[in-house]
Length: 147
Length: 147
Image (cartoon, rainbow over all chains, first blue to last red; front, side, top):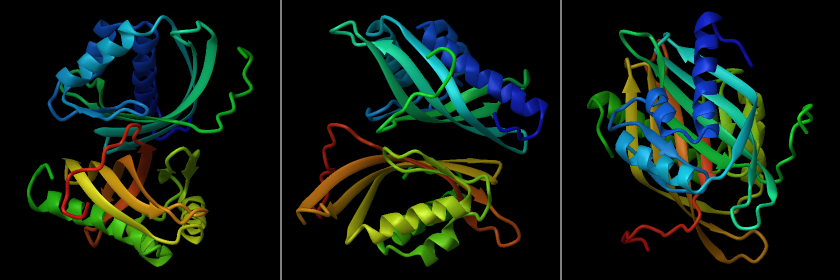
């Protein structure tokens, strides 16, 4: 992870990790906690159209979760940029292990994500306001111990 | 275009338009003007890996321009969010008319883009700091007069 300004950067990194933890756990309750509940938040799933507003985004996650049996993320190449301790833009690679819903075979795919977080008052937590995931063509999994 | 806060929103919209104008004109000089020249700027072309830092990003545009004969953009669904008049996040759909480099046949494709701009001092211009474009599967061109 590239550091920006110390503690704030680590806080943003933890928020980013919580987002993928919510996804791995297929938990709409955890997604509820990480996203800002606002009509202007944006979510772009790989290959999908864009969703605007928390209610539409929440519904998209519910649909994804109900069609996913298992999914695991290894997040690499995390790059964090923070502006005035208010807005953070995170870029990372989602190395995804999941199963084909039809054949049940293991699948490894790669997605590049842009995640933007806003630091909320009064609790100073970083809430997700923008997720843009897009498929990596010619994806090569990273050389990690889990592979 | 969804308005955020008036004049600033229009300024960001104009900056976003200048980005696509630079692309249409296959002009690295115009790209030089719209991007922030910084080692932390990020560019993710559809299906490509990510490029970090202006020098690497500039080289990627040079490669794209040298392999593109003609390209036209119709930008729709522009949504602008501005934070503290310092950072702007733009989401838009790039409706692209281009030619297959091998067959010469006309191609229409759709890309969703996240573009982030930073308001620079002292000239108050909005410079591009983040571009993330990803292909839209099952793309349907908009119903505009040019189609």
